[in-house]
Image (cartoon, rainbow, N blue to C red):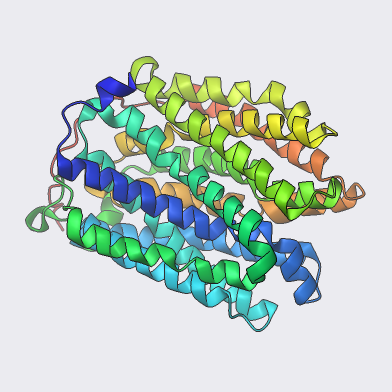
Length: 409
């Protein structure tokens, strides 16, 4: 199936996929550097970990603003230039985070980073899905979404190898590296074939399109809220869970993170590819429900080896479900708002789920520092919610993407 999906590609299409994959990977890399150093930041600024998790909350909460701003820019002026500006911006803000003199400045910079991070996924996904052969959408959806755990994978390596030498500030400074991707995009990546300046929607018309599809929008936002609880609820505090509850070293945590991100990459690509044959909704439901029997091994094991196995299987299923999302949302999207709709509903879901890290930290504190219980409760509940919401929804598998037409003012 994957080999068939790779047939008939042009060189330009390969560059588009590579750029979008790297853009999302490096964006996730910059985001996940934070989850490894919550304890260290709290120690330097002499505060509780739960206070530092406010930076995660605001990063996620600000992403819808970025999705809307950059999405409208992509619908008006093109996917390619918007993506370049967005990547440069989030790289600069990541770098600046390493110079924060206090927790307040750090949180402000992370909130601004959230705006830039919110723009990348929707713009990159629309550019990719509009550029590739239709028969490759499922595979590329899984590949594109696997950029998220790939970024987490890279962050875990940096943490495990470099943290003892560069500290938490140095890790954020390493986060400026994605800025180099702008040069690659400028040289090798063409504009989406579904976009033209002559046919671009006017600045006010994207809102008109979104308002006319408000029912679909509400459904998509609710679905993506559950999805974001699913991913962040199984990822953001897992390193802290390993460090605080199981007293594992940074090197051990880094190794386990590498293992479960390999599982995430494999799951995303597999279920994304399978969705081309079996349908988007069916693959999401199966992946979500498969996570349920994994929860005890993932959250309540005693040994590092069993925790690693459980984490691998959990992220295989979580990102397996996520692997279908890029293509699913782009196929459901209104034609004239594809630069805005997928990213905007995704990031609105992030906004509603942004309380996750603080919520889980609070649950753990309430039950005597039992992070395993907090992780399991959220993961189990949202897996069921995702399965139900997806089953009662709709899909538009294989729909043709055409050039955007101007909407009358």
